[in-house]
Length: 268
Ligand code: ADP
Image (cartoon, rainbow, N blue to C red; front, side):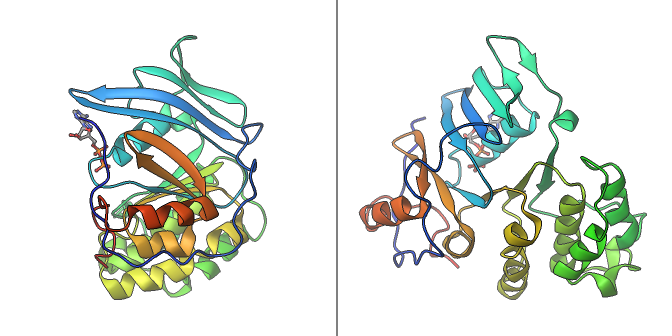
């Protein structure tokens, strides 16, 4: 399969904040550097990019373009056919050097489409559990900060089964923050929520980069999420993965309009 974009019938994207300047995506220490290929039958993903610095990188690909595949490869749940993945100067995968670091040793934190909480633990224990087995010892005040940011105070003694979808997802995000991965990967975290819950949660998510500092890779095909969150955008064009600053993405957006479209864009 050759990846392509389908029609976009949507308003131009209003971009948040200042675009990163040219050259700001140079690879280096602290960067996530990726150059890999993966095929499943006639589907082929080729991804080459380097993310440096804090902020949110939105992976804005249409359905079927390989978002889940890319995340699985980054997480170590699947192996690329060839290439490398490096993070903060550490090689996580390298086909030439036969290096493959196990998922639990990559030190990334995840939020998935649906909150996967321990149902036999209270909300508080779910959060403390993540903190205990997280990437490093929790800084003083970090627990209270996460609870405050996500409005979890009143949920701490609740059992996960009693939570609404939005509440459970807030707990899942809190847990990911407290696990203190060096990179927070969020895989369409709002896709299972209704409009109201989605807006509510976006208001929390938008504060994470400034208050917690961890760089975020955020996967979505929803334009409103991109508009609110993106500092930079990873797109797929003509089968090639491209990393763009917000400014570059905005420039290219007009060319996409009326052309082939991203599924889900404008649907919200
Ligand atoms: P997206 O998340 O963007 O919707 P996916 O990464 O789930 O896309 O899928 C991209 C393509 O890769 C699809 O054609 C899918 O069928 C195929 N694919 C993904 N994972 C597997 C797998 N484990 N085995 C076979 N094919 C797969």
